[in-house]
Length: 176
Length: 439
Image (tube, rainbow over all chains, first blue to last red; front, side):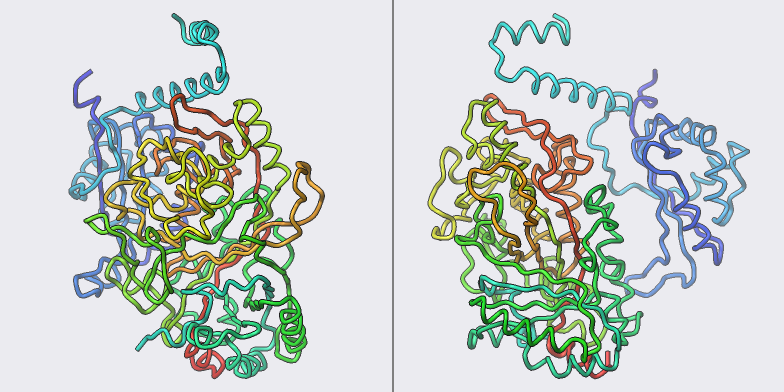
C-alpha cells in the first residue's frame, strides 16, 4: 500500500448555492440519517465529515460580500488519496450527494466520476486547521479504540488481584 | 451607556440568603402583565440596592424568549440569540437531557416558562410574606403560576450529596473580594479577574468583543440565566460510594472525594490529595491551585466533577482554553435531606435548583454541560463522562489516576433533570422598556 493511501488528508470545499435554494438544502441535510445510520459510515475511509450552510460571506466591514449568495461548506478528513475517497463516496452515497450538491452552481451529478472530482477540485480551498492529531488511518483508530476498551475492561475485572492471579488473567485474556 | 447600576442582584455578588422561592409563570394578558411589571420594577433588587442596604427579602425576575414575545417584544430583536430563542428543552439532546431526563418527563410547568420570579430571604417568615403578596398579585397581573419550587441553603452550604458548594465562583470586576485562583491566569501565571462581558451583556468579554445581546434596551445591564431543576438520588450515591469503597479497600469519603474532586468540606484534592484540608468556606486560599501542576490527575482525577466543570489550566495554554467557558453559579437545594446513614431512597423529592449566569449560553453553560461533563474526548478521557451529572449514554466508568490507578465501573444515575429553562435577566432599563411596550 502506498504512503499516500495510508496518509489521512483533510478537505475543505465551498460551493456556491443556486439562488433561493437555502431552505431546500437545509431540509435535505436535516433528513440525512445520523449516528450508526449515517451514510458516511459506509465510506470506511472517512474520519469526519460535515456539511454546513453559510448564509452569507461577510467582508471585513461586517457586510455581506455577495448579498443573497449562500455557500455550502463541506469539510472532511479521510484516508487519502482524494480520488479514491471521492470514488468511495460516489459508490456508497451517490444519491445523497446528488440531492445535496444539486442545489449548488455547476454540479453535474455523481454519475460521471470525473465530473464530481472536478467539481470538488474547483471549489477546494486551503485547509487552515484539521482535527486530525495523528497520522493514524481509520482502521488504526478503530483497532486502538477496541484495544483501549479491552484493556479497561481487563483493568476493572482484575483490580485487587494478586500478582500471580493478575499474570494468569492477562495470559488468558490477551495471550502470553 | 451600560453601567452596573441597573443590573439585577445575585449575579456579581451572591445574596447568600438561606431561603428562596422560584415561581414559573405564564403571561395570559400582555397589556395587564406589562402594567403589573411597571408596578413591580421599584421592588426589584439590584446590584446597587443590595449593596446599599440588605432588604428583608429580595425580588428578581427573568423572562424566557416566548415570554418576551408574549409581552410584545418584536422577534427580530431576539432572533440572533439561537439557544435563548430555542429554549432549554429544544436543546435537550446536546445537554444530555434524554431518557429519564427528557423534557417530556419534566415536571409540569417547570420547563421553559414565560417568566421566572425569584424571591429570597434571610428568614423563612419574610419569604412566606413576600411570596404570599406576590402570589396574590399574579391573577390580576395577567400572569398564571405554572410551577413553584422552594429552595434553601443547607448549613455550611452543603448540597444533598454532602459536599460544601457554591465557592470557586469566577472572579469578575464588581464582585466583592474574590479569592486567589477564582479568575484566570495571566501569561506570568498570576491570577486576574475575568472580563465583565463574560457575564454581563454590553461589556467586553475575554475575546475583546461585546457578546450578542437582545437589540435595544433589553440588552443593557442584562445577563442570561440558566435554571435547571436537578433531582438528586442521594441513596444511590451513598450506596455506590459505600460499595466501591468496600471493593477497593478505601474509605467512602476518599471514593466520593475522587468522584467530586473535593473533600466534603470543600477543600480541593489539588491542594489536599491525601486528607481534607481546612473547610473551603473558611480558607482564603481554598481556590489557590492550578491543575497544571497535577497533569496526570494523581491528586485530583482528570475526570472528577469539579475538574471537568472548570479545568483551569488542565488543557494547557495557561488556561486560555477554559477562560471563555465559565459561569456564575447561584444554586440552592430543595427537599429535605436524606438522614445520615440511610442509603435507600425514601421517596422524598430532593435536589438542586441549579442557577447559572453568563454572557453566552452556548459558549458557557452548554459547552460545559455538553463537552466537558457530557463527553470525554475534550479531556482525553475517551468515552468517560462526568461521574455525577452525565448518566445517559455513559459507560458508567471513571479512572482515578494514581500508582496504581483505580477503576470505577457501574456508576449509576445520581441526577435527573426535572425541568429548566433559558432566561434573560434584564436590567432596570430593559424592564422599564418592557413595561412600556417600548422594546
